[in-house]
Image 1 (cartoon, rainbow, N blue to C red):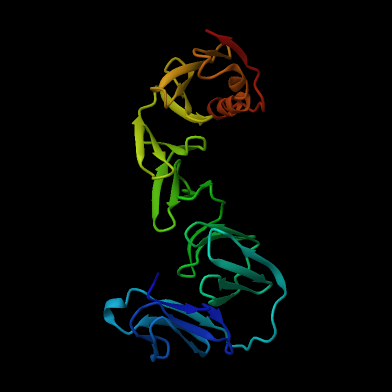
Image 2: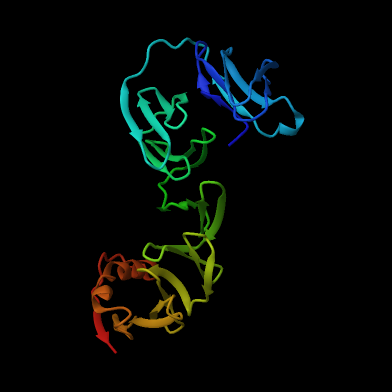
Length: 317
């Protein structure tokens, strides 16, 4: 947790602003807008009111100059309050959230401390591990919000593609680029990975990433790289949990099992349009038949087919 916090970050001329000292020693905070200094006792808070405009608070110490908190005060007086929209509480965090039509109240169940943030009114609120929340605001997107620093730590226009108790993953498309960037947040730090294609194996809690001609398999518990394989032929797409399709030089499409020694277990022959299953114990017929839509997508991608469905027949070796 940071040595100090300021709440709320947006207010009015009659809004009480709280300067909170999370440190065992007294702190002197300076407002760079007015150059006024405030002394805050250890593990306590000081209530002030500010003039209109932007205010930047720092510890009055050159060694701490990198960290600051901002507050914007509107040139107006706030009268009355908004209507109650909903209340949220979760066993994951020690916070209760109360959403009004014009603000959000944060109440610490553990310490009893309360904060307020004006203008923060998401349509959807979901609690994440390690004192984080996920806000969705219509027309804007998704925000990962830290209840430790009371600041947004990440914003995305699209929903996360995966989340568990260790990670939340967002996919960011690079405009004009064939690859995506996966932003992986462990509720402390971010890691970014480039991916031309990726797939998530929920059963094994793994993510498969194809990039620069290699397939890397990473754990979604530790993000450790478990192993790396080189796909046979020209890689096209991941399918199911742990399989991929590639195209050979003679135009045949083959299905490979990543975890079973990168073994070929099925083949889609272009001229005959049938799938030859080489090992039915690994990929049974009912799973193959469930791939009709995926193969249609495959044909649409590599052959420019406009057909929504493609008739396939099956032949077991």
